[in-house]
Length: 335
Image 1 (cartoon, rainbow, N blue to C red):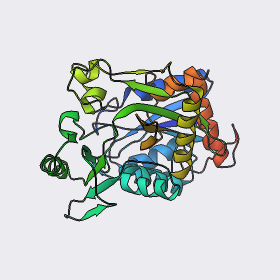
Image 2 (image 1 turned 180 degrees about the horizontal axis):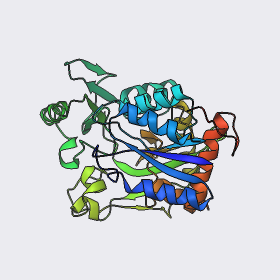
Image 3 (image 1 turned 60 degrees about the horizontal axis):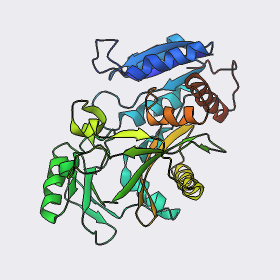
Image 4 (image 1 turned 180 degrees about the vertical axis):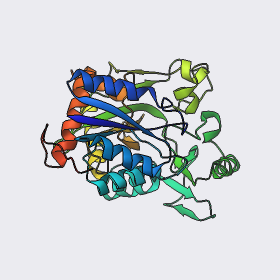
């Protein structure tokens, strides 16, 4: 197939300022015999359309998580892909919007009776939305941002109303509403899911916080994800837990699949869970079109299930085509 890997450029005039995952995906697709090319765009709609028209891909492998500085840019990008009629991997405009609003996510989970932490939303215009009285400690984070942006374990985990409002004010300065939710103290798991009509839950990955010093919150904040010199980064790691019973494993997978379906995730995604000491499992976030870098938890889980990297990319591509009623080599040339 002719596959265009679509990505965001950090700098408009530098074609190489994209994430490392892009080259990995291109190499993986080429190893399967596909003609894969990169289309990098910063915030230029005309360049995006022209690039698609020039390449006329059978499939767009969508790695575009943002578009310039537009908060809902990723929603607009997939909307444009719908308009030009080219098949693409991952969620559509509706699914992307749900991922951008964690409060709506919780409401859909509530409708399906899937457990999640009680929450409140403090919007930028001073409106308050809450489902009831929240119990301390609380966790405060941006409503829309992902990749743990705006999350600092030492400040985001609060033990008083005063601390909560200080962190809410900090998030408002980032031009986002604040999501406040009850903190679930317990073990944290990522369960990756692959598929559409019959999605498959991959082996659970646990975030091991045992390397953190005493007093450092057991959360995966921005430092733990991105600051390689930080105590948080060095003190956390992703592992396959060896002490889970078959019953607990099945329960984690069941909750993940329920959340995946409730949010109508397409092709692939990852569900973040917390298991309290009582054994209750809470959905923390649902990440559609999650990170596909080779060391990421989704890829770890796939390899644990016997799916090597290039095969994983192939399956994601095939799932996207199947949704459009197309088969390999049958591609849409109307972009």
